[in-house]
Length: 379
Ligand SMILES: *Cc1c(COP(=O)(O)O)cnc(C)c1O
Image (cartoon, rainbow, N blue to C red):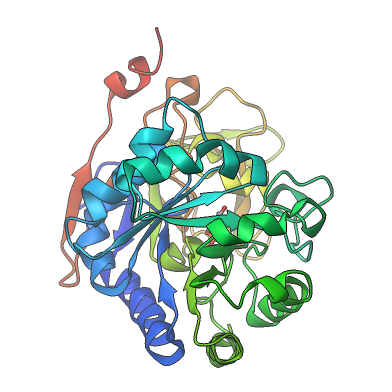
């Protein structure tokens, strides 16, 4: 069976493989792992995710609601952690009601909202995001600890008087990085904030741990967590990966609509780099296309382009063993994390459907989009 394109297909078997590895990390290290919805929020898979992960991390009201409605229903003990660079007064009550942990970005935010939040939800745990000022992220756009970062409280801005109100501390300093980078972050974090950890219940190590990537040193991660817990009186440790959950769990399938020649062969597809694979332009990176090679490597080279009017809506140059024709399918690999969570209806082009490939190979369409999704965001 073929699905209509464009469509994201999440492969259950691959997702579960990632979840099982994360479960192994939890079992071996004693850390709790929660899903960062920012990177992966296909809630049709949350029955599966909730079997392995302890909850979700949300970046505000809407993600917190999604976590509560679509994740906690599968695991009543699942936790909702909500962080925002700055909360809005009009949303804070609803956030307090549905969050088990709330993470403030600055001392001022904490002072502003803590009484209200505790009044609404006395059991809520309070944390502050700190900035360990350890900057190793490869790309500025994705570097939470870069110069003038607004994300997290630096030691200079930290106020010891807050400690009696805090249950935990959060940091998030990595992006697609390995356990060695975490070691560096932990070192910086402990040098700056280590003296404050002893009376806390937990430290959240954030996301950006590329745990499910081939070659990631999982045993080192486990060792780092165990060592940290041992040092600080068996303190609870959280990790909140997004990318590592959705990493290499599926693809975006598109169709060639037209081939044109303007100095080179160009294939126009029914998808878009700008609207449907935004990180390929923002990061940027070259997405793998199934069965293709670099330009010139195989016999027939094409520039793959999107079906919007943006000149730069280009996926790149790829070569194939046989010529492409209108109607051919093109499969962009590893397009499940940070894709449909970021999609836009730019130029009115159709949002790709969402589908799941079950373990027995059947393809199940779980969501289709239409003109209404475009019109519904405009007026
Ligand atoms: C983005 C983000 C995450 C998840 O990061 P990944 O790179 O997807 O693992 C976790 N925590 C915070 C605070 C974030 O901003």
